[in-house]
Amino acid sequence: MALPTGSAIIVFDTPVTALTTAVSIVSAGFSSTTITSVTSTAPLADAVLDVTMAVAPVAGDAFHLYRRDLNISGANDAMAPDANFKNTYVGSFPLDLVSTQQFISLTDIPLTVDQEFYIENDTLQATSGTTVLTITPKSYNTQA
Image (cartoon, rainbow, N blue to C red; front, side):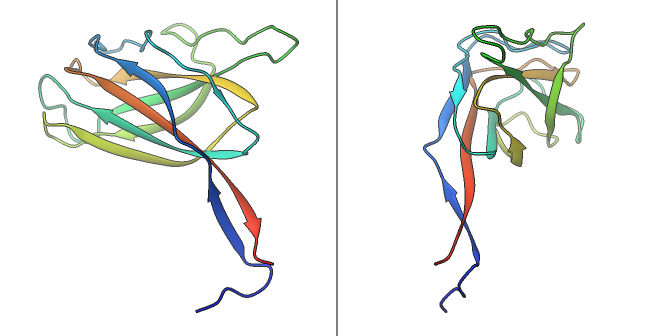
C-alpha cells in the first residue's frame, strides 16, 4: 500500500544513551552519574528506561523523567533537577510488580536543542544493577 502524497512519515534519529548508572537510585532519589547531553534539531523523542529493582515495587509506582536545558542563554544552563527543584517534568515510567529487568517506553517527549535528562525514583525500592535511559529523537516529514 502506497502512502498518499502529504502523509506524515516519522523519521528517527540515532538513539542516544542519555544516562547509564550502576549506582543504585534510592527511593525518592535522583540519578546523578554518567549523564550525556542530547543535542538534536528534532522536536520530539521517544525515551526508554531499562531498570531492575532490588525488590518488586508496588504496581504503578513510577520513575519520573526531567529535562535540564543546556546553553539556553549563551553558555548558561538551567538548574539540575533534584528533590527540592523539579523544574521541567517530561513524563513518568510506570513499573510492574516485578523485581526483574523492565523496559518502559515514553513516547513523544518534547526536546530543545541541547539538554540532559534526570530520573527520579518515586518508588519505595532502590534500583539494582545498571539503569539505562535511551533517548531517540524523531521528527515528522511528509510523503512526496
